[in-house]
Image 1 (tube, rainbow, N blue to C red):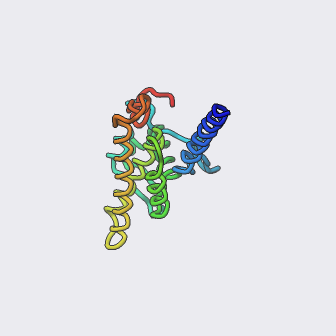
Image 2 (cartoon, rainbow, N blue to C red):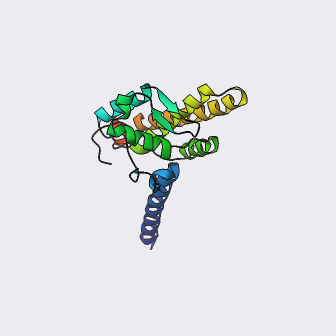
Image 3 (cartoon, rainbow, N blue to C red):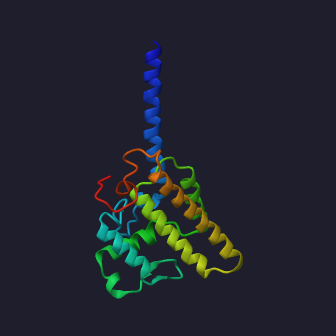
Length: 189
């Protein structure tokens, strides 16, 4: 009788972990799982799946970005903006990442309570949200600057904490591979 109870508890905890993992993954960036009709954005887009794409994403971020009054992000460099990955970058930046303080705070709270390491796409989107928040912090003044700076700090701490978990000694053998969690390796996660 005792082994049946143990088996039942084991199955229940495995089902709970599976269900909660799926639920928390969808909560971080819900727009990635609900594409808009007017957008050509694929379901759950990922910008970096190779080292070349990581370098290209870095170039996009280093290029001068423009944020319009309606918060649409575009790349000013025409050559970079004409690349196919640039349209994916714009779609993720304009349709997936949060841009309001309440949404960014909600993301930070979800990240701080999330067990395990982030999936590659969630790490990527959080890093883009961090870059957007840094940009908005630099443009803000007075009390608004303090609010944006606090959001920036929260996102930074969440990313740093995730990186520490992924490279720490207590990480699982799968989790210690940076390509699997956050890098741009050949993982097919």
